[in-house]
Amino acid sequence: MKTLRDLAILSTLLLLFPLCALAKVKNQHSLDIAESVEVGTTQLQPGTYKVEWQEAGPRVTIKFLQGSKVVASVAGTLKANDQQVTQDDIVTQTRSGSQRVLTEIDFAHEKEALVLAQQGM
Image 1 (cartoon, rainbow, N blue to C red):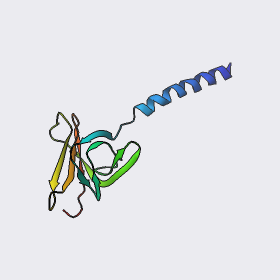
Image 2: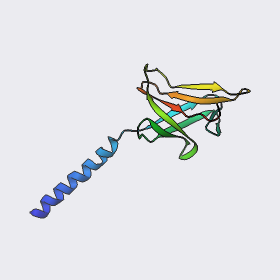
Image 3: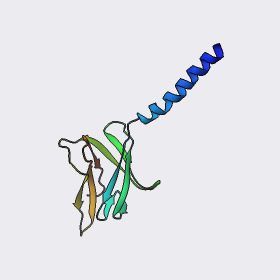
Image 4: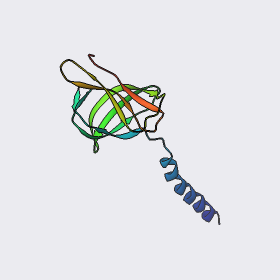
């Protein structure tokens, strides 16, 4: 009888474990980049990227992935987005010549934005 009770408790815990994993806040978004931009020291070509960050306060490390491969990584900050945009928006600055540098990512329908640290701007 005691074994049956222990088995029932263990089964319940095993069923609840996946629900806890699904409840984890995801710090990632998909992002379409229409024109080549520089991120840190890496030139990103047009395409779809997954953007991930580890939240540890306002300072974060931002990773750009294609598939499961990290193609760029840069320091940045997570900030409150005062006005929510209706579609993903990237903010760029033009460096000497015509080089575009990614400076900020505003995610659609989100209350946060990523500001990328700049090198040599």
